[in-house]
Length: 223
Image (cartoon, rainbow, N blue to C red; front, side, top):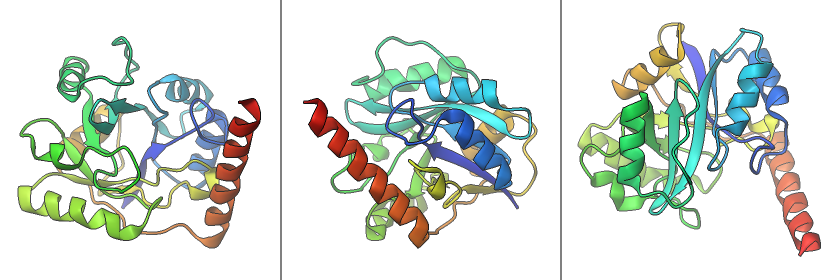
């Protein structure tokens, strides 16, 4: 099985590590493809693509804080569509269709996070559902699992890594080595990937908690 990471953050939004560092760490882990999904921007994945030496496919990603919750926009190329933050989900669907991208409902039922919740039941809106996100209480993933099973929606997982110690915790699995970004996106769209259900180890928890404290302290001091 080949591992693909589709939910990662860098210094282009609220992650600790530079995109180039994340790319090199992903290659060392043996990941076959990587989506940098910084909040409301493709900047992280654009830099990651420049930093990649061809050892790993770079998917252009953007975790959009839509008007109804967080949505992963995964694309074969970076796109411009105005202001991402607050975009209507159906407008986001139009953008995805126009540019050959896919939409994944990110951590859709996680309490305390910007989640789309019941919007997932809208026919044709999302290409897949993130059924496992390890950065919250694990039980919050259960409603997404139930939804995907009942409606037959393609299921994904994502580490939602904000520090490289979390990278590769919960990648999706493909039975063949992806040859292109479109290959990965099509496999997700067709439900030909498998989610993984793992939690970060102690080292990753400590690194993530340390980074969260540092970020909050920095914001407090800047006020």
